[in-house]
Image 1 (cartoon, helix red, strand yellow):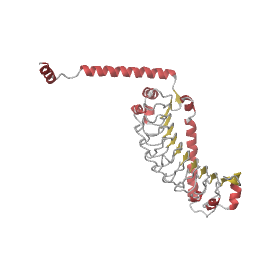
Image 2 (cartoon, helix red, strand yellow):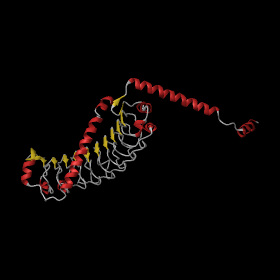
Image 3 (cartoon, helix red, strand yellow):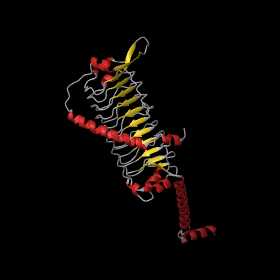
Image 4 (cartoon, helix red, strand yellow):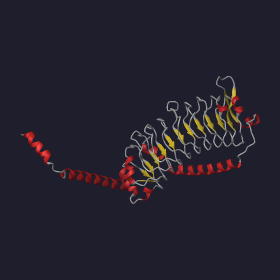
Length: 348
């Protein structure tokens, strides 16, 4: 697959639509939480299990059968202790309840997929689950990223929580993690996301003022930083050699000269800068292409061939002017009689 084909798979408009839906979902859930601050204890019962269980499969030894999928969504649950006995479960959805404790899941060593969105969780900590590949804990009250080290985990969703700093994500234990969703938290720094195999990183709607500590993300292709407080583009490294799509919409970037700091990203093809002060500058699109020659799309529009040709001309003219300035500076070097005298004495 070519870079152009991969770029077509990245749809900024679709992401914006998903963002708006997530914001509505978050607002609705916050209202719901406020209305139901006190809940009647509601444990997950055998009767509820019978209603929610499905997908009958052979057990690991091949000698028996067990249901491996459970949907217990939106049941006002406060207690899932019964799940300790259902060790063969592989798919569990316990979203939209009032659950505060995930420890009953620690023994579900066959678990592949877990969805625990919109609960009252303060932590996503679990014992290492050897086969867990997808985990979603969005819209809880989680304050940190500690205790997440499932060796086959590929996608982790923690959006809409209360995380301020990213800590405890071990790159050796999370070697298969390719997508990390941290949108809508209170994150102040990108330090701590040292995951070399990560491909998609979503950090929109946080409290970031700069980018730092992402130098080792050599496989990262998509980076969303929309709705933060970023003023400069320091922190982008040539080591981020796979980055294709960068969304910086609605930040505080005012100087178009900052775009020069993205020149060393060899595969950067799509950049979003809408709702930054620099996007109001005259010749904004032209200046972006002058600074980043390999850019294919700015905001929602692709560059045409005539745009590229004009940018090439400007770039060549600037290069010639720079060379002329260097020649003038060389010709105007100050005369130094001391140096001339020293040179004469050496000759003598």
